[in-house]
Every structure is written in C-alpha cells, then in structure tokens.
Amino acid sequence: MNPSQQRGHEWLASQGFNLQAVMRADQWPQRLRQSMEDCQVNIESTRRFVMLGAGGSLLWQQLGGDLTDSGHPLDTFSVNAAGRVVTEYWGGGDVEILYPGPTPVPLQQLGVFAGWSHVSPLGIGINTGFGTWFAYRALFALDNPLQETVPVASHGTPCDQCVEKPCRSACPAGAVRSHKSFDLDRCVSHRLEFASSCADRCLARLACPVGQDWRYDEDQLVYHGRRSLDALRAWCEQKSD
Image 1 (cartoon, rainbow, N blue to C red):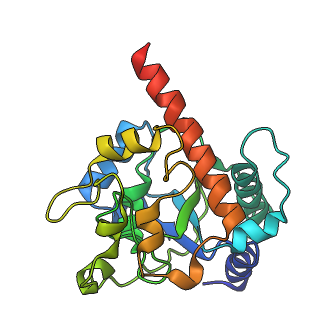
Image 2: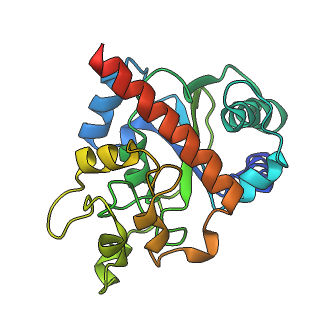
C-alpha cells in the first residue's frame, strides 16, 4: 500500500471510521455480485468499492453532539469524509456514493465478505470485537487502483461461544428464539406498543455480552433508537395505505 493511501486510511480512522474495506467486485462471491448488479451498480473490475463502518462511539464523538442537520448528520458526515479522503489522499476523481442513499445495496452481504459481520440470534450482524455495537456508515465506488484490503479472518460467530444466551431471556417480545430465526413480526409489534420497553433501545442487544466495552452511551442509544422507531412507524403506515 502506497504511503498516500495509508495516510488516507489513518485519517479515516481518526474521524471514527475504525472499520474500512477496499474491495474489487471480481473478488466477491457470485451471490454478492448478482445482488449488486440487481441494484444497477457498475461492478467492472477497474472499480474499487470502499466500505466504511464505525464500531463503538468514536464517530459519534466526532460530531460533538451537533445533531442540527435536518436530515441525518451521521450520513452527512460520512459522505463528506468519503469525498475528502479521495480528494486529499487518494488522487481525486469521481466518487459514486452508493450508501447512504435510496439504492438498497446489500450491506450485510458486503459485511460478511469483509469479515466484519456474523449471523446472530438478534436479526442483526455481530462483530467479533465490537459485538452489535457497529454500523455501516458509507459505501462508495471510484475508478482508482487502490490496493484492496484483506478481509478480516473469520472464526465463526462469537454467539457459538456464548453458553447462557442472555439475549433470549432479555427479549420481552420473545423475538429472539432458540434454534429459530429472529421473529421480526413480534419485535415490530412490541416496539410499536404504547410505552414499549424497547421503543428507543433493544433490551436483547443490551444483554449481549460481546463487545460491551464498545456499547453506545445513553445519548447515542436514544438517538438511534428514536430514529429507528420513526422509520418503523413510517414503514408500517406505508404498508397500510
């Protein structure tokens, strides 16, 4: 990796993006390639796809509590960071932002390929180090011969080493089940109840012992939880129309 690209990665890390992956589409499994093509994404081998993630609260702290953006301040911050790293460290050129945006790109599949994410009983991915306290923040493409990063070595989901499975008993909706997939309908119904205990946080997620040192602080928990609840209500209203 050339020094300029390395400095770009270091700058991104200083901004709170402590998960980074640079990929070529010809490295992906066929299912992932097809998913991206279904989203009308150009996956020519000359392109590089850069995915940025944030584990813990480092990125949140970079915002310094400034949530005045009328849209989504974390999205704005992430998109701006993508533009800056390309312009200031990676030689410039056009940047195609694939996420955040309206295109339903397969972030979970990309996370599995990068070694960031494993299957969990909670219906969301789990990271070996961060637990469930990580998020995909940006995915962008550019025609620039960046050196690809090496996927994180996978040793299976950390849930396999968890004997007590406290996430199951902590879920008041019974959505986290033994030997069955996550029951999304139960989760949604409980979250939409009046004065729900899971309105702005997931009690099962909080009970998970993996990555507790990276758990979001109260302000961040409430912020993400309320945005998630608002999106869920809007989705349900759209379905009922």
